Length: 530
Image (cartoon, rainbow, N blue to C red):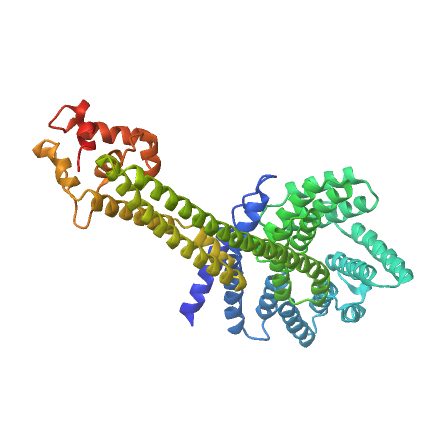
């Protein structure tokens, strides 16, 4: 047990050290990459918080339930769970309330009741929050708890005003929230961060936006970028830019707030789903869908009814739009499949026509070339390669049809990612090129079976070409085989062998330099090989 505790303490301390330096703040045009990276790594951030929680849980398990440390450790557990899992945070507050009541500690009980009421109002448990606040006697509260007491009432009535369907009650609730906000500002120290926050909100409500931005500047200057306070301040700044109509700045500060929430494993947040809504309105459906799905999973983890209600509407809207977009993409893929099928049919018809034309041409040439041996050899060469070409065309048509059926099958099965991976691969192209060159070599050696031996006879003995096992022709031999067939243009040879023209020139020059005859007459002697 001690070893496990040391491990969890080590992880917790490592997490604290990892967050001791302010996190990087992305530039205005780099927030999308930073946010996507944070979402991908969110399990690592959660592991840090879980390690801290487990370390506290181990300490709490060894602490006497009547000791003061028991109350303190439960309060620390509440702080860890407050923005992480609502149920667990309420559980530890309830344990502290029982402890305070057993020890007749009125101040501790009032502090716990205020904390629990605030958390309940944030979670949509308005009746339960009101009941807790009724148990607190404001006249008996110490000065340090009065700001929390007023803030709790301000928050509760603001939430009630936001979600009630009764217009009259909404005005009443907002009026009560404003009154408690005034009392809160009076009770706060002007040097406190909370005082600046409330002052900023009051200025924003009065449409004094420039003043509110100046106050927000002060707030941001006084907090680190790896704290919940920074996440809240940037979220409030995004609201100010919304009022100013600056959409880019609004999205940027929402992204900073969401980025901080994710890095701190805060699941009770509004920044990311608000950002998803803005992206949806701008037409960035795919990114909006990813953000709202992640935000929804975090909201479910937090387990607060009001948060689920807040995100459910936009989640449903984005989800439906995303599904419609996917359906349109599937329609396009089906259209392309039909197009490929039609093109395949046209290709088959074209090959048949070409075959018939070549057959007629071959018959005509056979009658004209009977008088000349050279012409007979040329005709023989063409017939050999035409036959192989037709076989290759037929094989490629069969492959294309098989490929079409495979594409249809994968599209029907929704295997689009696998299909994209296959399309991007060069394996099929490399295999087809190898088969093409093998067919070329076989056909050529069928026509000129002694070509390699006679070609080596034109080279110096020490420079003759030795083929590897299983190799019919190598690159040098294949170049001069094409020349023997009458294709002596380097650009055409380069196109067939998929080399650059300079490479073909270099190969030709290199072989001629190895000749035992005049290099100027070398290709003429190659043409005489029978």
